[in-house]
Length: 102
Image (cartoon, rainbow, N blue to C red):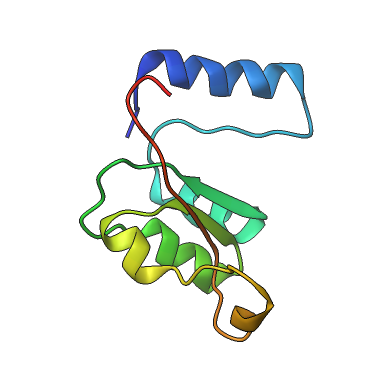
């Protein structure tokens, strides 16, 4: 989707300021999604609510590490790396504490 306009502008600004180092895309196109998943190092999904979510699963298929908010389907489909004892099962990173206004 397009998300909130101020956040989309921040992505575009970061891309302008760090040309060649940061690439941001706001919108949806399945062709772009596949290329992005194959070429990215990380996929950030800060969704506050996500009943299922497919991008984090696609990312794992392409070898892109998902970094997801610990909620709903994101929490269920990404196994976090909390310490060295989880190295054999970890598939990405989870974070919590996302609130309006943060």
